[in-house]
Amino acid sequence: MTSAWRSAVKSALPRPVREAVVRRRADARRAREHVELYGANRDIDLEPLALLRDAPLEDLRDPERLAELLPRLGLNDEADETWPEALRPSLGRGLLHWQYPVQFAPYLAELSKHGIGNYLEIGTRHGGTFAITVEYLRRFGTIDWAVGLDLMPAPGLARYAAQHREVEHVTADSRSATFRKIVEQRAPIDLALIDGDHSEIGCRADFELLAPHARILAFHDIANEMVPGVGAVWREIRDGMADRYTCLEFIDQYPDVHARTGQGLLGLGLAIRR
Image 1 (cartoon, rainbow, N blue to C red):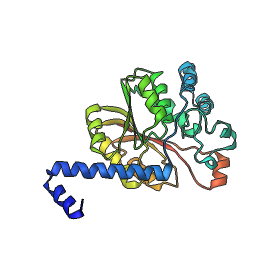
Image 2: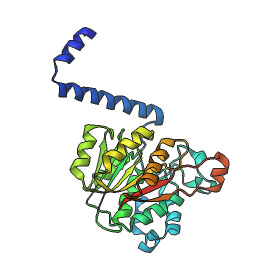
Image 3: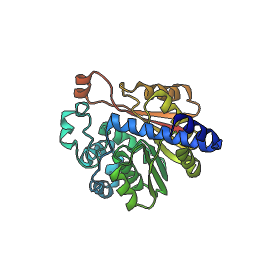
Image 4: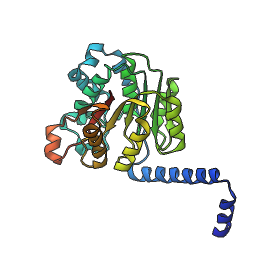
């Protein structure tokens, strides 16, 4: 088919159809770029989740005890230079979650206080953080639904969703009509984690879409100097929207990693609607 013929066929289509075709092509392009940059999502071992299901509630509420438990669930090994020596035995195992226990534990402990009954995560990667968060929140109440979104399918997360009727694994772009429909249909949202497009434009777009619908918004990588866009959006909210949100930061670093890399890494922020 010649380019002239393709243009003629395209111009003959109704405008909504043409726009849908353009969106699908853009989504496919971003998915290809995602794989080229990060590689395909890997499978995860869901068995360590039993440690969360069986742990005493007092241990799950205590950030220090929880920080000792989290490495046993298995940590991501894609950037091993960003991990402290003490945690290296846990890399590449289990749930492959990409969180510093010294940040993730107090973050989760704070969530346990807020009566969260549903959860949405943008940018699940392999699915470890999503599964841990859902299982943790379930220990403190009923989770009516949980949706994990990523540009690429995640085999372990798909398996986890198949085991739990209230869990949904969605392969889509957070800028897509598919995701906007999910947000509108699922609202109101108790907790949403933004961990997708780490550019300032992309992070802000996710915030602006979710802000009218979410009671608590979480941001990942607010202290990560390698992706300054997330930190910029977070500071706008923390410093400029204090009348709308109570903001909490979980940004502790491991001294040996900071000495080796010379920069802050990861970091979680919570913006709790007043």
